[in-house]
Length: 128
Image (tube, rainbow, N blue to C red; front, side, top):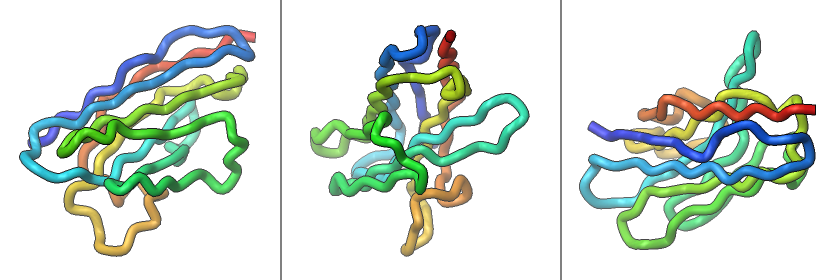
């Protein structure tokens, strides 16, 4: 069983920054693709960014450059970060981290069903 835990959410004023962290543990050996999604009230879960074991990154089609994904490069470590800058009230949502352990051999990295394990989410609230 894999456990996924996010941290770093909170309340921030518009224009501010937050750095989310996520660690996936419980799976011996290997580094897996990991992604960040968010879900605002009344909306579908949307893809933000993903990163492969080799460090290749994937971004949402409407990526504005404000959110940057990175990962810890230590061997067999599945820990990723999401640096969020210039936050806006519309960024308010629950932010989820996910890891793909048994995902398809060919992934878009952008679809929730490609990920096997999810964290509980961390709330990000941006005040105007």
